[in-house]
Image (cartoon, rainbow, N blue to C red; front, side, top):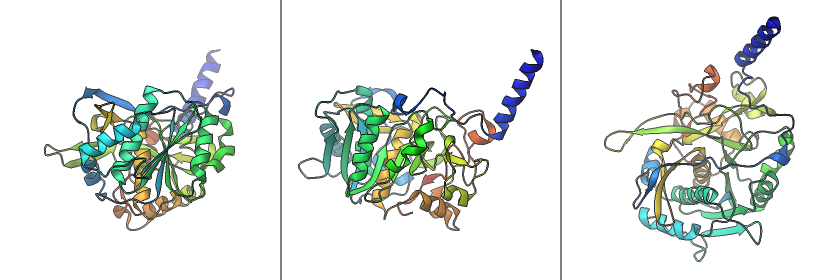
Length: 369
């Protein structure tokens, strides 16, 4: 018996150091029919009467983004109905001097996937973050909120399919994720849009480990960072966030764009995330809901804002991101995140130069890729 235990221990050690221990392998009984998406969003502190988190001006300065601009429609795929989103967005816009985005002026549109829908406070908070900050980053773009009936895999994909069918889509954001499952490779075609718009998904907030749909090779997975500012409020540094989801997919093979980039230790599988963005609650974003201001964080903040970046520029593909990072002018595209961790798995949990499994290629410092 003792010999068997030591043999098993040796096998586990081999798997750890070969890079497979942190791969999000799931139970054999877990399938797409069991999938339930979760919004990776968290509140920092308590609600206040005025905003205390980061403002659009601070983020635009940090990531070298223009004050205005945007084209086409940014599609937000959310869950359940958010009945107050338009009123909340109006208050957000007024506070930060943004152009109004309403149904009346044609900037905002809501599409419910069912005639009768429930509400959910946690998902509504996620919708608030996604809509308010997508508009903040690309105020000239339109916003389409697609509301899935429930967070089941089947209902989420119905919403994704609707988003993909829209010819006016400039980018599609999915601020949700969940554990991988064996059938996920058969669903990659859902993340191909009629307009050619890229899909963005949060990589998760539980540290090391892969999640779906960020694991799809047709989706740009967005990891998390921590922003630090000096005493004057100016940007000081950006490091990997401890909660940033990342790793190697258990089922998706390494796509051609990652093979060409030669990501170390991927072992022929899809590496996650592709890029990153501020996600730490301590450097969280200001949002307003029901007249109350909150500071929120999570990788769910990065997906809609990367989608807004795509709407600001001339379009972006996941392959182009890797090509830009591999080019000689890399410093014009990304801030390379080289410090911080999201776990205790050594190489796979540590930020480093070029590509890493915590922050991917890095965070944006441009709108044109």
